[in-house]
Image 1 (tube, one colour):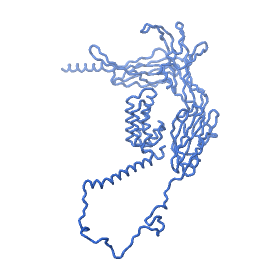
Image 2 (cartoon, helix red, strand yellow):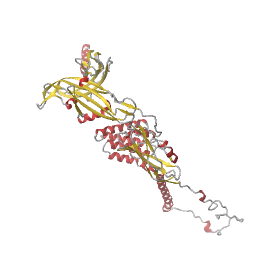
Image 3 (cartoon, one colour):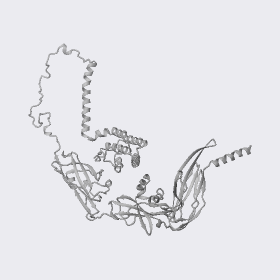
Image 4 (tube, rainbow, N blue to C red):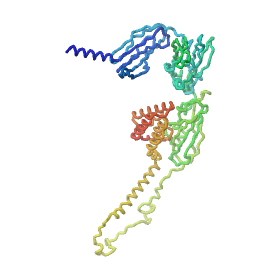
Length: 602
């Protein structure tokens, strides 16, 4: 009996072992080249629990671990259903110099069991990639200022492969050998992503160099450097498979086509050489300078132009980029609170303004209030900028805007009627006088039985209705009048009252991610009293924090708007989950009861 139990346990143990996952290592063959990655591929099959490999430290090389993908498959074999899965990891080892490197034993834990590879020594040869592949980043202009538009150009030069039998590969075929996914593109990631979506190659020029043909590919990215020195481009490392031999094969349609029979990896790192960013000069910098770089003009409009002291006047400041190329998204408005001439005649808010970009113009809206009657105009407002072409600061000024400011309405206390008379100052003014008599109360009529009779008031339903209707109607009229007066005193109250209804309508009408994002920002604008269309993603965090929204909800809304931007960039319709998340965000903001901070409404 004991032997039988042991046999059963042994069989169960063997079955469990057979069902456990496994790992297979594919080690590199032959020599490697400096700068070109060495790949160790690890395939984990049928594992319930996997702990990925850890990147080891290897002297003279950089190492990273990449998960290349997961696959699962279900098949019917012999009447039985079999499920299998595969997880692939790649340990990428990039030698930094020629010589030899030792790859230690790599390990991966599969279902609690550690599986290790064998250590291996690799000889690293000096790279000759420079004669086959090169890359550099240049700047136009080569010398610029902080905030000045700078065009960064990534120039990739590849020597055309020429086969004695099949001839030379063209620029499109050579570009297809560049590893777009395995390369690192730094600030050019967006341009490469667009090429991958279109399955296209960048523009290329053919160049003859020392009797060899080279294809020069260019990618361009416009940036506005925020600091001095060399511009930040991130890590730009180009990798490609360079052919050594070609052969001809037949495809499924029996068409003959060329394929690479032998190749070698190439890797090159690009740097931004010869590009210098200079600081803005301190000499002759105007006090009104707010960081603008370029050539700008300013225009100011006011509405209304006839007001009383203390009434709001809405100013619209239009800053126009004359030459083009400036980064209007980050352009700052003029410092109105520091304008002594404007502050002397008007109360000016000190909070930062948000603007709306339209074409080559950015518009800012601000509300000011006149301090005294007789003010004849909105004074000229200056906007200063550094002109990189002339290398000096330039100040532009708006035209004065004529306005009319009348005294505020006040109550004349001398006309208040008192109990002593019409004016309240002259006691001799006729009024209501009481006269005392010495004989006491005098009856107007003699006492009769009719006067002494019980005259209790008896009321029925009609009498009660007649008594109650007038005060109820009066109360309703007072409520309507109070409601209208409140809306008249607070122009944003009606807008806040219908903010939720308006947001729900925007959500129902939204057909893309931009519409969903607009419903969120529009709801916040309605609730906080900001002008429609002026709230940017950069301002939203500050506005929500000022309005009392907690950090968790602010983070959720920021992530949601990020998803909307990515969906809008992809050019696809907004998925249903985005619409549902937008509805939840509106519900949460509505429950948070946004409050308007004093001085924040525009």
